[in-house]
Every structure is written in C-alpha cells, then in structure tokens.
Image (cartoon, rainbow, N blue to C red):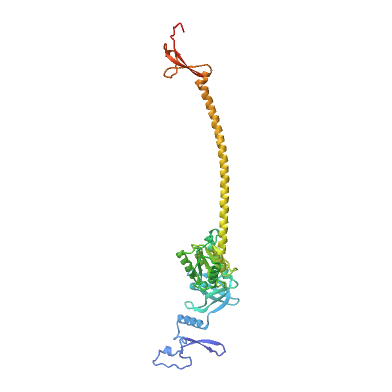
Length: 424
C-alpha cells in the first residue's frame, strides 16, 4: 500500500490508500475471477467485506507517518517523565496548546547526558511514528538538548556526587608526580594537536624521557569506550612512570567524553600517577577532578612532567651545594660534640679520682687504726717464734727458748728465762 495525497471537493487535502499499481480511477484488470466481496471494493477497507485488520491499519499509519516526516527537532516542555524498569524513558512534550507522547529507547540514552526533569524546556530530535500495538502516535527521540546547559549540568552533578561518595575526589588520595620520570604514557588521539604539543615541549626541553602513545578517540560516541580501553592497556602494561590523559580544545560537546563516569573511574584506577590536560585553561572536566594533577593545557602537562637539561644542571648544582653544606654542618656539629664530650670526660675523671682518693684515704685510715704497727708505736711489742708466729701466751714460752721481739722500729733477738730463776 502507498499513500497518495489528493484534493477534496472542499479544497483540503486528504490521504487515500490504494494499491501501488492502480489508482482508484484506473480500471482493474485481472486474469482470474476474484471473490465477490473483493471485486466489489476498489481498495482494501472500502467496504465492510474488504475491511482490514487493526494491525494493518496501525502499521500502515506508522509507515505513512515515518515516510512523510523526516527526523526533526521539536521544542517543548517535559511533563510526566517516567523511567521504566525496562530502561526506557516515557514522557510528554507540550506547549501552551498541545502535547505529544514521547519515548527514548534504552539504546539511545547514551547520546543524552542525563534524564530530563519535569518542567525542563528542551529541544528533542527524533522521528514521528505510531506505536502499532496501541495505535498511538508518539515521538521517538534520540537526542535531547536542554535550554541553557541544564542536562549537562545535571549529568555533571550526578557523576560528581557518585565519585565523591566513593572518595575519588578526596585531596588525600592525590599522589605526588615523579620528579624524573623515564617513561611517560600519553592517552590521546594520535592525530590530535594535543600529542603534537606534548612532543614539541619534550623535544624543546631536551628531556631524557620516552613518550609512549596509547591511541584512543577523544570525542564522539566511541570515545568513552576507547579511553577506558587505553587506560586498561596502560594498567596491564605497567611500564610507565607517569600517565597523561589529554586532548586539545574544542566545544563542550567535543570534550564530553572526559566527563563520562567510566572514564573518570578508569583514570582514578590507574596504577601510575596521572595528569589530566583536557581542553584549555577555562575547561574543567570530571577527569581533571579525579586525576592526581590537573594541567590547564597539554603543553603545560608536558612541562609539568619533564625537566629541561638546564633545570637538571641547576638542580644538580643546588644538590651539590646542599650536600657540601650538610657535610660541613655535620663535621662542625661532630667537632662540637667531641669537644664537649672530652670536657665532660675530663671532668668526670677528676670527679671520679677525687671520689676514689677520698674513699682510699678513708680505708687507709681504718687500716692504719687497726694495724699492729700503730699499736707498737704507742709502746707495745710483739713476740714471734722461730716459725714467725706471734707468741701471745706465757704457756707458749719454754726456758731458754729463743724468740724475736718485734718493736716499732725493729726486731730484738731474745731468749726466755725460767720463771723461778732468781736472776730474772
């Protein structure tokens, strides 16, 4: 069946259904006789006997509408928005006089930043069609642009809130960049200006680093998947000291892939420290928030990641100066410590000697007081036998027994006399 727009008697146009090869006014030529109820009708549905089914009617209406209207943009206000459990979105677009039912299939939602809110004024791009199962006209939408920046702002807020809830925006998780990386992985388009700027800066600064390019699309519908795949490749390789995720300037829509939640989580999960350099200085993406460092431009990212030969020489001179100063300070400190230790050791020796001398004098005094010599100095003497033992009792003496009498200043030989000897 095809549609033909004809003229009515009142001057208005109307749509008629008729067989593709035969307009209603043309004579029908058949080779075989047809049933009476068909031959009586010029086209299907003209008579009760030639009535068509509801399915054919609704499907034909869908074909006519889809053939008559190319995909178009329609402006209106969102009302009665519902996100069905099957993933599809259902709502109405309305203005002050009319409304139309709309649907966004699940497969088309990836082109839309965020679900629209009731009351939001939007421009929707889609095709007018008929839902055959219910015979309802509806507008099938594949893109939505909100007035101002409503949808994109809402998508950013949702993504940022989710990342913040997982702690990916916390300042304490930011890692320090390596001062002298040897290998830098750059995730970007191999044909873009960003890579050219990074390589130019590295060559100009004569930095002794290797730049490894991990190719990925940086705009368009495939960009989020390719960026995630490239970052996953970097993680599996684990050969880079630093990772730069970058693209040059462009419109907000061109850079929207770097606001994708999956891309942001892939940047946060990178094993090596990361620099995000997306667009120009005024552009701020979700990747900038989760990366360890944000550079305003790709050139600035290369300058942050590398050091020039002159900077290295200056750094070496400063390091040598700091080393010399540290050694000098160390020697000076050790010398002072040694001098103080020597002084303390001498003082401790003097104190110890004085203490020991006083103790010795005390012991010597006690020994002198207990010494037999001191007793003999007071007029006493000691008798010793031939074997040198002291004779302390009268019973130890025998007549004519020789013994020595030890005095204070010498020894006197002596001999014992009998007790009853009158000469004694």
